[in-house]
Image 1 (cartoon, rainbow, N blue to C red):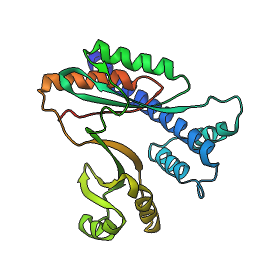
Image 2 (image 1 turned 120 degrees about the vertical axis):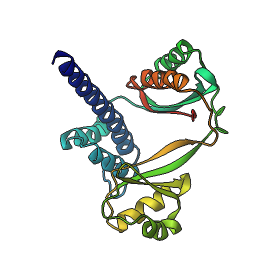
Image 3 (image 1 turned 90 degrees about the horizontal axis):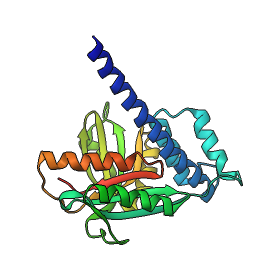
Length: 235
């Protein structure tokens, strides 16, 4: 009974940690979006997307409103969006997106994690040939017909549509992100998450044991509050 309790407790703590990280990431996005183009989501596309993603992870309304309000607070931190590129163990490319008020601190932390995992930090732009930025939309699959949806959305930039674990996932080119968002809104479709992600153009084949090394490195980097997302090209 003791072991079962500890197992459940561990899973619960992991869920809380993941939720806390999601709230931190989206809070920064809400603040940056509101600071960039104002607090009205109808005229601020980036803010509207961030609010939609907040809803998708059940972020409390008061936390959403507080994050938007911080954009007008003169004493609030200014965040810079910085991308760090490098390689982890086994020749796997690692790309880290951050939102930080102290790039010196953030780059030191990313460099430390890569170095401890026998990797290294690279120059900006060094992974342009490895990753491509894509729009990724997630919708609940229930009640939707994938083939019909694909025919409807192909003119708005849908490059790939597939189902995964009860969700329909749509990929678009970076430049078609806004057009797809508007097309989904116009059809009244529920979008649980939409964002620009880095999709690997080439992948590295590694063993299961080596993949565990990559997962451990990604988890360590993601623990940093400055980090918004981590991508790799391990197959």
